[in-house]
Length: 418
Image 1 (cartoon, rainbow, N blue to C red):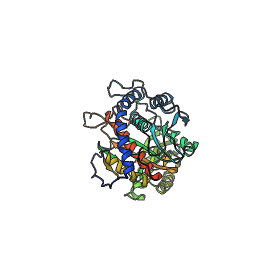
Image 2 (tube, rainbow, N blue to C red):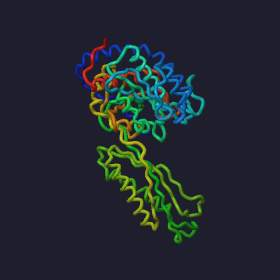
Image 3 (cartoon, rainbow, N blue to C red):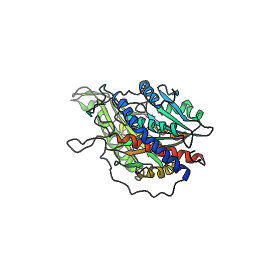
Image 4 (spheres, rainbow, N blue to C red):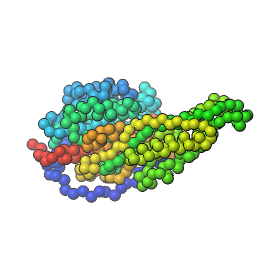
């Protein structure tokens, strides 16, 4: 991971909010504050007992029990969808992820996980913040129908979000917008990002297999060396992004695995490379995958070898709905954070699947991931030392509340609270 960009953006100027929504903000913010001690305790319990992708039944059950709103309906095998506020119109959905990672925790807190699984990506805090908002809305009412999506399998394929969308459950629940919040140590603490449009990259995996003619390492003239050909392919691929993609948009093409041979004195018949492609525009994805194939096949041919390229699409571009992102800014600002509307990341998140069929908004929250190591580096996402402080639960809750109010605003006129 690159060094964190922790510069603080200039405050965004916002106008006067809708009075009815402002009244809802004040009421719900106070109710959320009352829920935070219990939500923090829930965060500790979830963090101490995480589950891997596809095995989240216990985590979902713990969150449902903390909500106290009934069992909800199963989604994507191990997930749940829980309705908080009924209503005849369109709904706003708040999403949080259930799964942890196969990481041996090294934080040393009393509520550490000891099972070789860790919430090293903030999902424990996301879930706890979601519960705080949901319980507050359940107690005081809300400006629009609200559903909660406890989503499984964010960390690995098959994507839990894709399965939720394919199931049609969001359409059945009349969901208009889906809002999520994610901690992000690449942003300064106290900054919340709400970028309109693309904010996370689409991802593809690729494998290049080069086939030649192996033989004795002492007689290279009798071989067609696939290792040499693959080495040239890897070097040649490095010009694709710099010379084919608009530098103001960017892309990432990274070869991250090489596999060839079993002995120093044997030229193998085949050599393989694996890597990933990340883009912010679908046109760039199509163009780069074709260019990758062209470079591989033609470079291999120059060395007397053949190359095949297999690619597999993972997540699409995560594009925030511009109206929803802008409508969220006043409520974020009102909660006291600094709002950024320009930061983007070539990370990926399966939340992108929701954005294709609904208004979607992923908010990124700047956090301090934990104490620095001897080189002054603070832990980032997926690190065994990653552990934002408990204040993050309230920050997640405030961000989700802002998104909920913005989604309610876009549904039409909002009556003041009774």
